[in-house]
Amino acid sequence: MSVRPSDPRRWLVLLAVMLAFLPVVLDMTILHVAVPTLTQALGATSTQVLWIIDIYPLLMAGLLVPMGTLADRVGNRRILLTGLTIFGIASALAAFAPDAPLLIASRMLLALGGSMIMPCVLGIIRRTFEEEKERGLALGLWGTVGAAGAAVGPLIGGGLLGHFWWGSVFLINVPVMLIVAPACWFLLPRHEKTSPGHWAIGQALLLIFGMISVVYAIKAGFGAKQPLAVVLLVLAFGTALLGAFARAQLRAAQPMLDLSLFAHPAILAGMIMAMVASGALAGVELTLAQELQYVLDKTPLQAGIFMIPIMAAAATGGPVAGWLSGRFGLRPVACLSLAVSALALTWLAFSDFHQPGLMVPALLAGLGLALSIGLTASSIAIMGAVEASEGGAAGSLEATGYELGTGLGITLFGVFMSAVYGRHFDGPAGLSADLAEQAARSIGDSYLVARQLAADQGAAVIAAGRAAFSATHSVLLLTAAALIGALAALVFLLLAKAKSGGASHH
Image 1 (cartoon, rainbow, N blue to C red):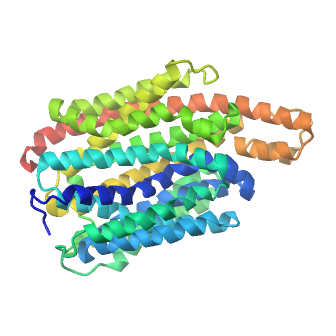
Image 2: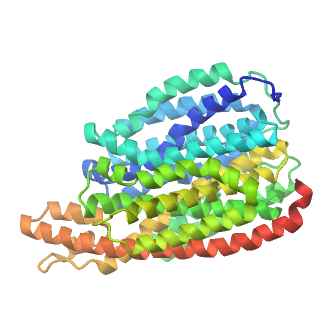
């Protein structure tokens, strides 16, 4: 059902879907500050910790496109309400998980619920706001909720951990769902235009297993957790599945994913921006949260407060990006925001977090603002390049870019971190070989090892860990800066093509 611009309920609808979207984004980052507490409470290994954090964005990346097309077939309202219910139940299960494997399973269920919620939210916004200016505003507000939610995650997590046990970071979702689900049930139109045709479950499975295999192979390969033969086998398997999926799409009368969308340079640029910027943001936040707690001895809440500048600035980026792109055009705004992010990251790499002064918060704010302007610019690029009928497909594509970026960002940062950390870790003399090897894996492992030792030797291990982590975070931030700098140049070229080739789409 298309809502005429005079429909007064459209802003209420926007409010309802933004509330539905909030816990999904919160859950991507709320765990960042909880990692140290959770690792110690569940005695989780560093591999388990990565899976606990990562399985959520990973699975979601595979599920978003199939769920987006399913919503187009059976209606956004039905899928959204189902997703909210699953998400609420999974949150309760995660909160009371007794060990790491069960927590990982609950996070998988959370991802299923989340993947039903995300594309519906974008699809509903695209359908509810027909008028371009209003849609720009609605997408800007939606982007703000996204950025603010992801950013406030660590703060809320820190506050909860100050008073309750680690499960509270999941339990908080249950009351939210109890309010949001009835609101969506009342506000969303009962009758929707759905697209004809059946939902090809076979294609969906190809896509889900293909995505997960490829991403898992990348994780395992970089982490050197599996022998190379296994990694290559999984990678080949995943690539073959994705190839079969692509072939099915090109043959199908009603493809699940319209691959011709990638022919728009603006969509390609938007996807790459969404992936790299969200990956960098997630990786930097995770690195900072660990640096602040493990190295600077801050509580989870203090770590959250320290990160307020990056969050507050990220929350304002959405509307600012809409206004700037309207004024100066998408290309200069997108490229400049990426260049500024790269500069801020470089500067942060050489900053001393022990004496942050005003410089570190200012740099964090600049980074948050620039990255979120870049992310909203990617939304505007993608959503502006398609017709209303393709809004759902484009929305799930963009959301997939975010999820993949977040998942891969955390993975690559995590893996890269442990590799660099291992090189810089110089354990105290007299530490047994197997303990030294465990301590060199990550700073969390160093703390777990230190617990098993006598006080002075434990303190020496922790001191070595802190020194190694500080060295690691500089290398990490510089690498991220180089990546984003390269991206700015690539987007500059791609959007130039979009200008010359894209005039016909508007």
